[in-house]
View 1 (cartoon, rainbow, N blue to C red):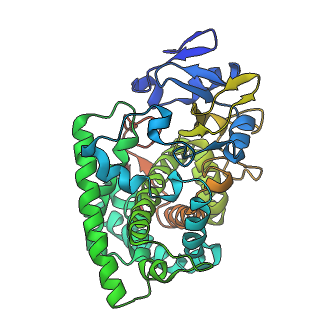
View 2 (spheres, one colour):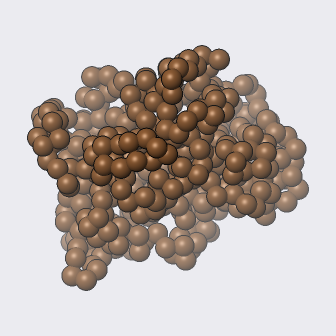
Amino acid sequence: MHLAVRDGSIRLNPRDPHFYNNPYPYYDTMRQLPQPFHWEDFDLWCFARWEDVNALLRDRRFGRQITHLRTREELGWPPIPEALRPFYDVDNATMIQMEPPEHTRLRGLVQKAFMARQIESLRPRIQALCDQLVDAMLAQGEVDLLPAYATPIPVVTIANMLGVPVEMSDHLLNWSHAMVAMYELGRTAEQERRAVQATQEFYAYLSELVQARRRKPTDDLITRLIEAEDQGNRLTEHELISGCMQLLNAGHEATVNVIGNGVFALLTHRDQWEKLVADPSLSRLAAEELMRFDTPLHLFTRWVLDDLSWNGHSFKFGDTIALLLGAANRDPRRFANPDTLDITRADNPHVSFGGGIHFCVGAPLARLELDVALGTLARRVPRLELLEQPEYRNAYHFHGLKSLRVRVGG
């Protein structure tokens, strides 16, 4: 074990391949520690048990934003560097970085487009896309499943929803990957430069698209967001563009990873793959279990918004805590046989979509994409098999594979 424990603190390098390729044995140790424990490498107080993580996601004394209560100057923070301002001007205008009342207003306007009934109407288009991708894979025989299948499904789907031309998909991916790198531990100056450039290019592109939809409305999400109104409130131009960027970034990154991680898990637990092949209608339950078993987001932070005590530990306003979603999803106190993949698991309150007011607005879409993607593979490529043992990317809390080489048999 590459984990050092001392006096309620741990030292564990999140860039250690032994850890990010398989963090779950380490989580077993973390859950045995007093909660919270201090992770020195992040300098964060962390929670790894399901009971705490689930409760903290819903506790309004912890939030994603703190500058609505105190200014950066009052918090003793330096100003945002001018070079990074374009990124943070967008990032700070998104729902996920806000608390009520602004969060309530924005979510109320956006979530109407993500109601389960409306999302379900996308099933035929997603099914057609999955079949088209499988046809292409069958023609090749051997593929990397990530670019061949896992990536196009959420990217094309969210592009179609927004009204962005599908031929822009590669640009959307490149912009999104560059921006998401800003959330990694120990990011480099080059990553920051790329993120700012991507933000500016992405923003300029969507700004032109929004203007085009104002002149000529169409049946897409951008048009509906332009027209959305709730008790006299509308999205500002900046909120609209920033929100669309967030929907694209959040709408593909996690889904790509959970399709890749999930198929890998199924192919290394062959009994579960065969069970899905025998009954592809299990794909909905399988999607939930795969999100629990190897979740695409492992660490989520919250600001402490009041002086308080939790499990006897005193926090002060302005402290930061980390919720270890991947550890909570394998907690034996809540999940029977948590290290066993069981695609028929019915009692499955995983926390992969978060909880409380920040529960993932795109959860119905992600669930539908996973349901269709897994069911299609089980029906059409039952002899799917791994060609090589994959490795995970060196990006701990965005947990996903570098590649997934498979042989596709009809």
